[in-house]
Length: 301
Image (cartoon, rainbow, N blue to C red; front, side, top):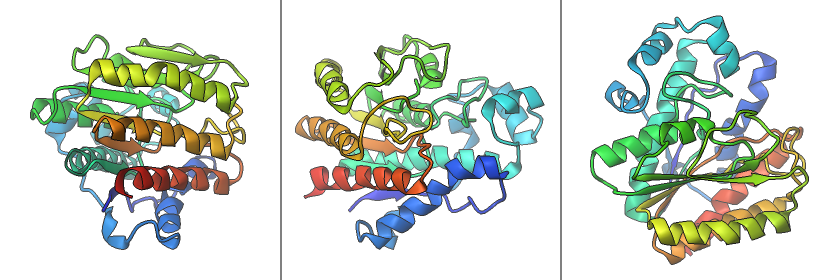
């Protein structure tokens, strides 16, 4: 059995240019059901996260402007979406979905949040389609409630998790690893616990070698109680912005390596989706669904 948080509130209209990167979140659960990988009972629609949880991570002034709809045009331009009450609700549901998925993973080994991976959100600002940082909110809730002592956030999106890095800068109980394009967004990088920068044109073989060089060592040294895995598929060679050369098979191998390393060490994993901007939505949805399939095979078969 696997817990998959999803968010059935994507029907509100967005400008066409903003809707394309969002539509995958509607298609992924449909595809997982169609392929027989999950049952409807596996899909959990979370309520919005409690304000007290949000304020463990985000500044009160920023949160107040967000919920009152008074973020400035400049602030929203950096985020990339038009501000609406539905957008704020979506972000709060995403955060709660990651909280619940993390708790499920601690009990059962693996869980997913379909609409999440908002790693560009800082304590006092959002950017890059991210208003609230779901991994940071979930991590702080788990730490405050003493459900875990140490967390490793492994961000394999092609873009650095800059908000996450800044939020946990010098935090003794959260290790942030970001493996990202050196010459990709964000162009000013924050300092993660470990940053692995990738040259444009990095191949799947080179990517996997870097993973093998660094990630098992981190897991053994940190010995986290939970791994938070941001499984962006903007590493694909078909991605409009990724600048890397990973095939679908390479992306599947990336996931298999990480899941296997965690399974071998009895480390629970919560997975969020992150970015994906291939022109054909099929490439994005197939790669994300392959992440689900690979994780379930390794943890439950």
